[in-house]
Length: 197
Image (cartoon, rainbow, N blue to C red; front, side):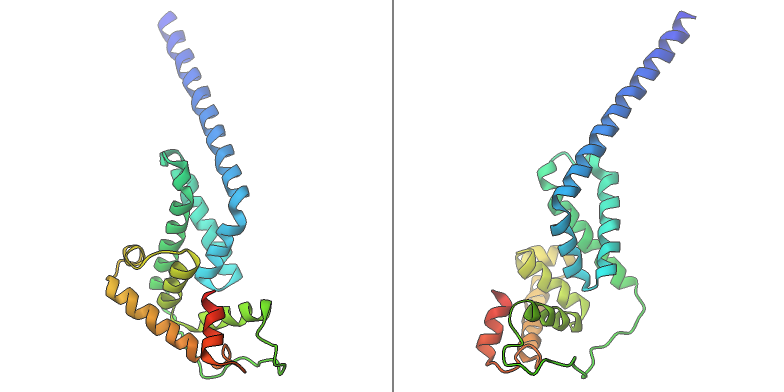
């Protein structure tokens, strides 16, 4: 009887300890997400270009990170882990996608004002132009200019060569420079200067 009682007691204590650890881990994860939700959502949005896809991508990345939370020993690296997870999930999603999406020659209507490209409107038009790029090129630009990644880091994340990263980013920037909506009423240097600022 004493042996069984001891085992039952030990097991119950272990369960309580595991439960307390799970509660602490859940509280730490919740605090982390609440503190950084805006920047995480922004990254997801920049990768997808769509509000609803960004929400789905972020939710999937958070779920994956929550499951791995106990295995992540360096909590300072969680941001990188989450961004890497979002990038990988996004790449997997568009690799699975069988849709044939092609950029069109038809551009959205622009405002007739000479000052139509300032502030918020410039950002909106920029994201529209980015959405017209192929997903791989858009992902590379987000990783380079939004996340501040280097060419080797981007190559590693996307599992492609550094030369492919360089040439793709060069072609993407050229397409953005030539975009008529982005350069409406301005010379190329002025338009491009605001894009990378």
